[in-house]
Length: 252
Image (cartoon, rainbow, N blue to C red; front, side, top):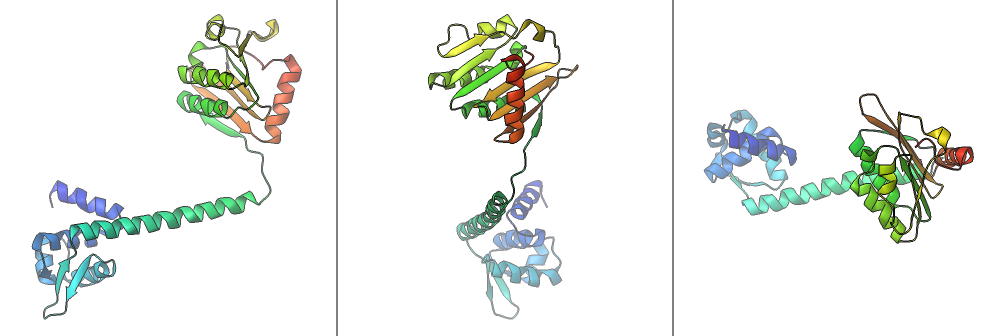
């Protein structure tokens, strides 16, 4: 087979056909119609296998059988085959996701477990920060000592929340971070206490609505790891501890 035909067979397999089914279907479109012998002569499928494969394709609605001697096979049109496979794909997709949705709803009725998540990698943490910030309704504190951890997307999300009336505090011991928000309406700029400015491993902190928290650290190689939790007893207690300790979100 040519590379193009191999790729077509692979594509049909991803749509749910077997390799033999794909090869027989392609062969019949090349022939127009034919017997098992005809198909075997142009497809990499043993003649003895063509009969069962053709029967399977008929059940799938992809070919028609002429009860002659010998039996002849004719493929349905390309458009009809495309619609048949699309309907099959839709049914399988709905079946799969309906089951996942059922499992999810069933698990929601069980005892809730404290969810503490770990994220590794700066870009993934950036995305999580933006997502948490975007869900703020009342109060939001963001802090970092590293200007590179305050991306344009995060800054824009903070400013957007401030515009909607959310109380936003940008917290940093680094002037470049504080300068990013000076003069921005609705964002309070703050510094950490003097005794909390000597850490060189802290990454960033985010507290939202006294309900969600994200904390990250930066390793010696510059990689970042974060933990976050939302709507959990863990998040609530940790936020209270942080705010009771310094009346500010930790080491920034």
